[in-house]
Length: 369
Image 1 (cartoon, rainbow, N blue to C red):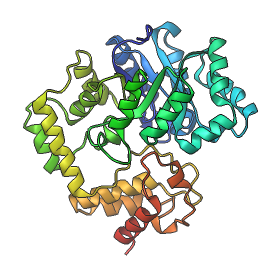
Image 2 (image 1 turned 30 degrees about the vertical axis):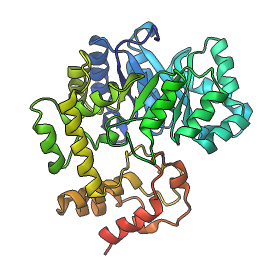
Image 3 (image 1 turned 45 degrees about the vertical axis):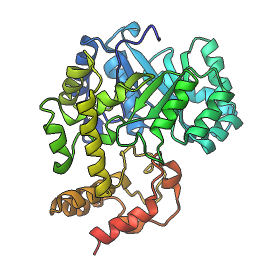
Image 4 (image 1 turned 180 degrees about the horizontal axis):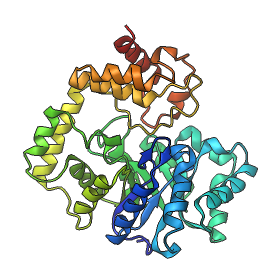
């Protein structure tokens, strides 16, 4: 399909190992080495990941240590970094410099939705990316997508030059009416566009299951909870790459153990993950994936994903730990849920289409009595 890409597991570099506010280079180096030694080579980043640290970590730990033909690197153009047509190329050139490369194997128009696509069109971003491809600075042109299937169909009809589409797909979101993973996948297959999967483990939710859901995985007698989520996504029709945002060597080792000799889920395993879906739906959890797109423009510096995680934890385990983390860790030097001024910037940025302002009020009621 794409000659340079090896295997079907991609290294998503949005949740790298951290040492305080810095990327843990020693751990990242070990993870890169294991990934490449096991025959995988696809790395994915974007300028906003880890406030820019993802790109420079890739430069220092991957690009500086391996020849360019040993790895495939995907980068993205995000709407918040260009206001006009004239801004696109300079930003692209800055990304090449930050990553320390002369070209990107894949360059994606990032987080496309109806409104964001309109901004890209106004600035001729697609046309400029296609020019960069002609110049050899991009090998393959594509999009990442967060909207309804009809919007995706419109984009693919308007730009048939798109070679690949990255969508959110996991077994919980597969038939979700907001995310529309299955419907988006069907649109990609209709247009014969290979699919890259993001959030196959739903921001870690499908790797660390509540006890009531974990029992269905344990009954299978083999494999981590994450393994079933990854295998579900990778086994869907049209999927050629499944990203995993690995944060430590243990997660890397687990992924390699079942993706190196990949086998799709069988009927019994599909039934088990469906039971997990039913548990999640009964718990009414906040389905935040901790992508952190919402935090960048928050005027009150509220760590929204962390506060949602605290409420989910409290609802699942009902112990004191969630209150401790809320008051001592996540709001000590940042805004509390009650500090929200209702500007709506977070909701405009949320790929999950969550009613964040209403949910923050729920968080405040639970933790700020």
